Length: 559
Image (cartoon, rainbow, N blue to C red):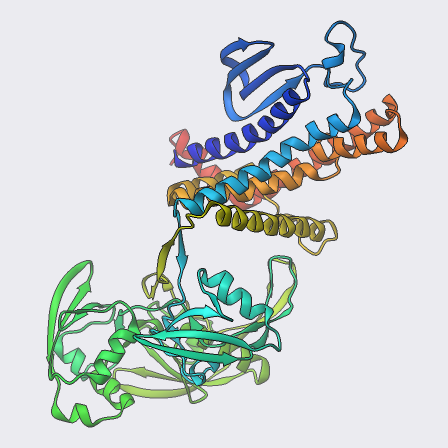
């Protein structure tokens, strides 16, 4: 039901606002508006006010406006002839045609203004949940728990835009960070490393990155690989989620690790969650624990991040199976470099596979460390942009949903209407430019046409966002409204952009185009639109055919 409501509200608002633009400008120019309908099909409620019949129709997926004398080839006579659309000056017709997509742009801007002024958006802060030891970020002095507050002197409000976006553009340029660590303020300066990354336009440029930092980090879910460790003897089990330690709440692994490595108490009381139920585990540290190095302390205690444990049975005929790996093993190091995260391990597999076709992997099972030579499986994977890329696989999977703590977020509100309007306008223009560029890439074949989606995909996304809440649904509404504006500005006859093109030709010629030219133009435009409709429906059915069949099976009681 969420999907039905989502698509009705989304398309209803988009098309209604679009038609409202045509309606208001036509009224302003004195053109007679015969019908303004909310919805299509059979009229459920209708009332004539003045010369316009206002309706609510059966199918609530948009609306339409009927102008007197819409047909440019019609011969309008009588007392209302001067008020017909066909008899308006070319500039007025251009204004009326452009009003629809312009209204969609205005709608997007208003949505973004409302999001900012009502504080509906929760932005990702600069809190660092993970810093890889030995990485560029680590060498700069950044540590988990630090918060980046300013980038090049500007306050960091949104992680994606104010940090990642700035760093990506700062190729061969210094980036200055202001970092808050508890009550201490630090200044960090660096030149980003270069990394080739795919973007949404199917380009792979080199962009700047700060290697080794993430706003997402492992939570306190633990794994045990030594049955003789202190934690195992105290009753810990692989998969336990530590909620608190000595009544101090912990959410991130770095918080737990810092506490355990710097603790002074001998007696520890853990609150853990196991299979949805909370319970207490107590353990006592021996005096020699406090004399050990960090690495020795962790091995003696026996608590490790759950992320690098194999939880699923290793499938036959994989590189992992041939190397002897089993469910429950803890991945320790690769080519003698300690493993700290799943992403790091994946990158190292790709690098070692491309350079040598093999690597050495150390794992722990029942307290014993074993090093094996691994020959990863080489695959040719097709990128969504249609390019085949070489990839190396170990043959093991990891579900991160119960391992990683989401980024820290905070509500963002801009009460100044001028600033909110400025920000919304910049955001809308930026999105429109991206949409125009994407359309150009599709026309030239740089972005595959299968990336396009139709009403089924829109309905799926609308339903998903509707279930997520007000903010994601409003963002989707604004984005599709801008897409609709761009689509309607395209110079395709039948669309508003096609009308604008024909009106422009008329303005240049100084006289109307012939009926024959208009007829051919409309036929060509209609053919293009029909081809696009067939394409997007084909793409939608290819994506969701199985789900569609299951839906109808449930509908008729077959499943």
